[in-house]
Amino acid sequence: MTFFHLGVAGTTLATLLWGSHPWQDPPSGPPLTFRMEGTVAFRPEDTPKDEFVVFGAGHEVQSTLDIPSPPPGGRLLVVLDAIPILGDDGLPVDNWTRPARVVAQTPSGDLELIRAMTGYGAGGRFVQDITPLAPALGQRCKLKAALAGYPKVPTWSLRVQLVTEEKGAGHRNPKFCQPLWLKEVMRPSSSVSQTVTIPEGVRAPRIILRSTGHSAIGSAYHEFVSLTHVVRVDGQEVARFRPWREDGGTTRRLNPSAGRPDPSKPNLLASDLDRSGWVPGQKVEPRILPLPELTPGLHTVTLELLTAPPKMDRNQPIEGYWMQSAVVVADDEVLAPSPGTR
Image (cartoon, rainbow, N blue to C red; front, side, top):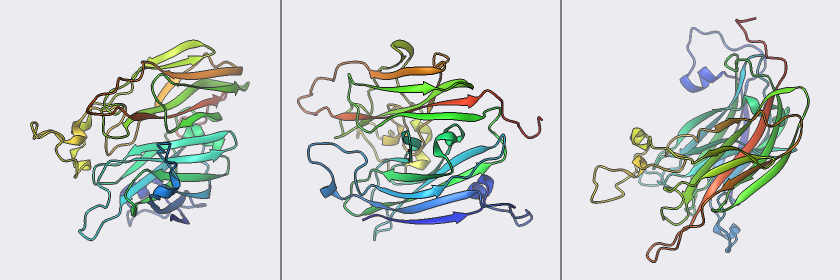
């Protein structure tokens, strides 16, 4: 069973992250932070036996929150705290790295606000700028915080907070936002398409995209073997890339239970390994693709993963999936006023 508690607290991002100072005046005006929190546990009876579900029932907490509006030139951020639940031995019940995300339910579809990977045996605080996504959120929106952990007991506490900042948006002035897709399972040689209608009076259309590869049963695919991703607009290729991260060796302090993946390499930890677009203990950095091809009017955006499925290894079955999300955003033709420059 999942539980959630909805609260409201007034604070700024600096106070939230670093704490307040006694010589500072308290913030004035209405509350700037909106928060939900709860505990997640896995209920295997809710997972279809013929399907690998990444975020099934029992994996999430949700609530409907007011959406704070940042001032002109300011930013809107989401803060996700993943806190491991400790057992009687004082150690985390679930010491594996797990995907966590916050998703908003909007009139035009589910919209991923942040994706992060917990460390081995450690949680973390993850912050994402979601200023461009504000037009889809409106003034009030249902948010779901999900984390896929598989022990049959409560495993993680989650806290989500929406925070405004007075500066930092630059000349962004969000006007348009439409989710394209949010798919938890995507196998090789697959594609996903969605239509989008770009309105008049916007500038700088772009796609914000996340793609991370994961192993379902411990094999190399697709956590450690990347695939070519091709993005097309109306059939025209506009981007080609392979999600990859190789900075895992810098995050050992975030992975206290990483262990040793290979006895013949005692100095190598599981968190050190290069992976398909993610690192244990860090958020997934979104890929931003500027697309002037998205002129006003109707367009079809397609993402295709190339390469045939790998052959089955006799000693190691090949199973894996890709977590995909994408959204189209654009700004108002009028640049936002920026404090200190106008």
